[in-house]
Length: 166
Ligand SMILES: [Zn+2]
Ligand SMILES: [Zn+2]
Image 1 (tube, helix red, strand yellow):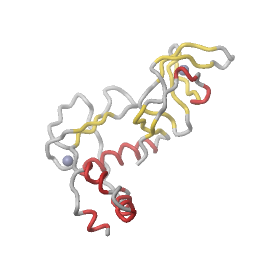
Image 2 (cartoon, rainbow, N blue to C red):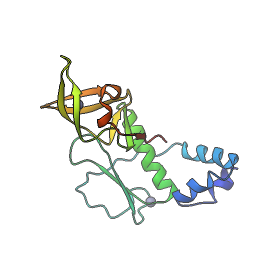
Image 3 (cartoon, rainbow, N blue to C red):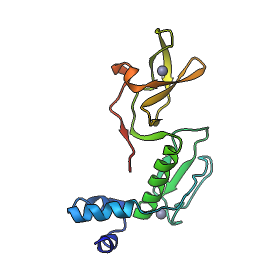
Image 4 (tube, helix red, strand yellow):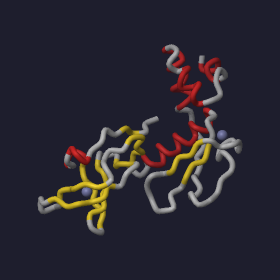
């Protein structure tokens, strides 16, 4: 079944549609998705990349790693199943090694207020695009970083977030 499934698509969009067709296809899709993947490193965003980092074909997608120093590394790739799979799995795994989760939908607004250690609240700027696996969000308060549990942040600064899971 995995083999039949594997040869019935090429693009990531077809993979996503096909896996909804039946239970068997869904199972086969998971097996294919979680197969080992090659480690790749994203070049810095100021480097002009003309080729998909995996198949060397024409790229039509990109994803910037949302944490770390600037300029942030960026994955340039194409919509072939293997290319997209390799990039997404690298992003998720490399973030998890640092106890971070990549967000598909943001968890907080850009600016908000956070509790200080003395109980008062201070204005801060939230780091977006990722959060700690522990459910904390990093923010910049004055000139230092603070990691605040998402449930300690006032509702009006929070958004309905979605973690990149696969
Ligand atoms: Zn490619
Ligand atoms: Zn804060």
